[in-house]
Image (cartoon, rainbow, N blue to C red):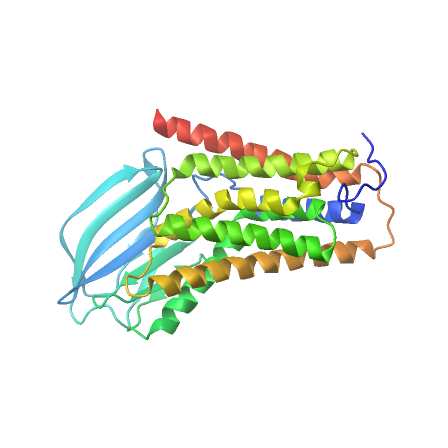
Length: 348
């Protein structure tokens, strides 16, 4: 198959196709675990109950009936009250118990041991008795977390902004969808309209799902999100063959339609962390802003790589234009199969 001559919106320069291949390879390496059973964060929630007491929720990814060996190390002087309750639920090991420590935990540091053994990171949320909260992310290179006293709305805003940025930059499926769109859309104005449509759509469903106005089952949505990437990758190939489809003619329509689905994916991630009861609007807004900033960082990175490769004194073979879309499509199809198999196994 050879790409035909220029049809508006039907193809992109070969250097950008190769740039896309490099980005796909980079994403695949980062997520060799494109396997959902492993590439998920653990979640720790501490809820203050007064009198130096806290309820603890500890959720760790599991593989079948075996949880990953990740443990919390509380500061010295922390005692467990009663027996812990534990169960396996939806691909995770969930444990609940209560603790007490003289003087409380403010100013104290918690550590997570074994974070490198399959868990990418740990999201920690402290819900204070006054309704304020602290949310942070522990990474494998520094698996510790210091609990601080309430410091106002700015703390909540910053925490959720950072979570939004980190979520989109670690969301390989969302990034590949945007990358596939960039392979089709030409011109600054069309790119702007397309990204804006995607942003508007997923903002609508993110807010609606998070606030409980709309409810959809998570696993099927994740599978359809992967299928949306396959669709756009196929549209890239059709354009290269001189048969531009709907995405080439009206990319903002496709971006908006599939953006509604991607918003449910973002909402699922936010549901893992929860929202502070006294700052729901701020937390929701800043998480969404963080997602948009992370998305723009990725778009800028992809376009910069394209411009850098265009300036290299290289001659690109004809088949190079197909490397990017086929790489994206194969990886996305793998996700489709994996996710469908996963929720069918859970249903069975």
